Amino acid sequence: MGKGELGRFITTMFVFIGLTCIAFYFHITNGAFDMSVMDIIKTILRIDINEKYDLVIFEFRLPRIVIAALVGIGLGIAGTVMQGVTRNDLADPGILGINAGAGAAIVIFMFFFQISYSNGLGDSWFSILIMPLFGFVGGAAAAGLIYLFSWRNGVLDMQRLILTGIAISSGFGALSLYISLKMKAQDYEMAAVWSAGSIYSANWSFVISIIPWIAILGFVIYKKSHLLNYFQLEESSVKGLGIRVEKEKSILLLSSIGIVSACVSVSGSIGFIGLIAPHIAKRLVGINHRYVVPTSAVVGMFLLVFSDFFAKTLFEPSELPVGIVVSIIGIPYFLYLLARSRV
Image (cartoon, rainbow, N blue to C red; front, side, top):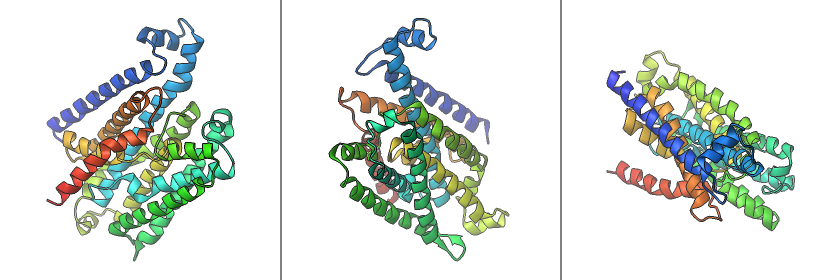
């Protein structure tokens, strides 16, 4: 770890935190109800209390921005792990079917409990607290199926892991579509928007529900991030270093699956952040995963806060699901990586 590498890492972290602060400024001041910086400062510091500003800042914009930041951090970290463990630059958390599993569980919850995402979540604490748990159960179920079909001769086969993930994702996606088609028209519309990736109904309960997952599992991943450097070598060489490869890979993958499931449970299926953030991080700070993991986190945070600002304001007063905005950026980048990998 040279001084130059450390310097690049520190500079990159400060730059992307600064860019996120700029995106935060535009996000919180602009919208259907514009506010000045002084209005926001006075409201937050309780200098000049205004009920309208209170409602807009604390009930709508601030929790939405915080959720975008947390989900971006989580997906950035998880994407780094997926790419590092599978040694596949095209790997993304969504490719393992975790997004689809969590989404299917939440659509089933909405259908059987007859809860409208537009109304029920705003009025029912039970709905807010239980829905992320359903999402995690769905994500864990998808992970269990993937492990079941990918484990061969006591070893987790990475090629089978990716292929199984694609199949599981397709299966859960079809299940979600089948269930949502049986919903009432209004509920189907909201389920479709949520499935595309949306955080405009975010609230503080959602924030509280995912912070422990990202904080605890993110810490576990960072503590083991140096192992991702070794996993880029041949497996026989890694075992020769005395590393329990299968155990460590399982811990890293399960930790990233937990993070992804928690994120999807509050934001819907947002793809490509876990693909793009690690690539940008590696270009900026190198391939040392001690630096790549936290850099991917701040890059993912900026990308999602910035994308959500555009999702909110691009067709104002109507809003796009943030997942669509991210896909507009991510699909061309994915095709570029795919074309480059064939060269």
